[in-house]
Image (cartoon, rainbow, N blue to C red; front, side):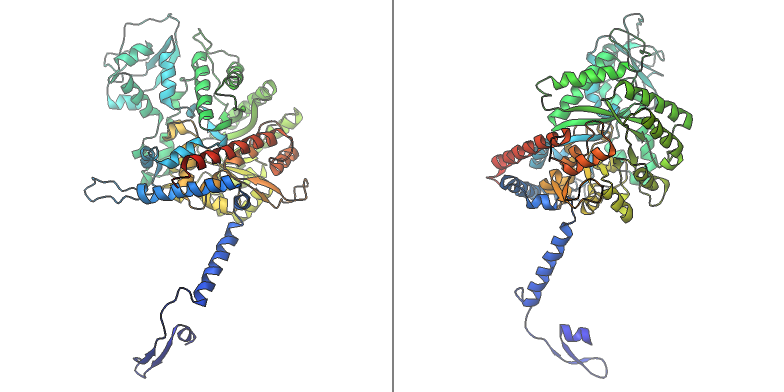
Length: 598
């Protein structure tokens, strides 16, 4: 009866049928109760937003940046209402279109939007999570190979049927004319298996010419849209397809002239996308180099890395690379290797670090977590490796993949706990982290950042589309995050940069916006024993610089530089300061370019 007294007055007869019902007035939007509700609503929303990474930054935006943020929000909303919301027809003549639809289906449509033009122009900071052989689109890499004198191709069987093209292995190599053949078609039934054919000859005679050849290679090295969206087949199935893509790439970047052009094009594409620093997952089985004019791999393991160091400096000296800060390598071993092989590779990593102290920045274990060995199983090797770095006075911090899973409490999910205990400085993916409130607090306390790879997680079937990604939950909880692209050449981006991942994030979520993509905020620093006052933490683009491993640092100096951010004279502070100016220039461009229309 108390509820009835609130919403009205009712008198019931003995039979339960209302005898009289007094109704007073009409709903009034200006009533005291309605206004009280709306005020409480605003307070509750505002309180929620104080926990976000970008909250205080939004309060301190410059007038130009604030206007730019408003313009981008208007562009986004206009395109949601007028471009992305399209109802499909039963006959299929008009396909359903919606904001946040699966990336493989949305990708052809994205380039038609104004928001895409904005995102492409944005200064994105650093790319912190990318695997070398899947960074540059294979179409561009094949163009380099085809144009390089002396390059040849061979296959394990004739590529004359769809089944053969699906199952055959093929290898690229360099030949100085010591091997000759009269064969000209690798896709002919008469082709002799494993016979080397000059690449230009094989391509010219391939069914469909160069376009047909490129399509064939891409069919073996990329995940097509219709495959990635088959969620009913599960994660393990798509990972089998994904890992098989790496096999054909092994010999594509071994010949020195190809490798050098590969790096120059990669760095150029990154710089053009607003990326000025990159940390590359490589090492392990990588690093086989055939020198210019040779046919055999150089047994010197340092040969590959000398080329990388030289090409970094060569690119920085060009006009295109004038803002490019450089690159470092996170040595990466496949987590499925046995203990002996991992230990052997760790020893090689220790030697490479001694030989190239500025190039190598850390250590990681890669490949599918769900079917690979968990970090806890590798504790003896990981603790031994740390002991060796200390004994040799080397700084090789951990940057572990962890929590790239749908599981909750399985071994992959629990890798997050081991990663934190092993003092990882960043976590790759961390997809399941949002499920663990205590661990979230620990991650924030230890200043651990999560390298979020939205499109990778989607294509590898952890989430059906960007709308189901836990990125908003991470940001809302105050977890430091930055966006990376993982393996863009394989996963369907067909670009080397970050624009598609950034576009997905800003287009999907109302709460992110332009400021959320790039912002930096103060937050109350936990007790690191370093600073006793409030300091700063970054968000997404700026976080990538704040957690970039520009130089070897002790744990204390690493945390201190993250906390201070742009304040001070450190290498990291100077890079963030330069980025801040690029960000303001970018905001001014938005206002000048789109302000009158939006």
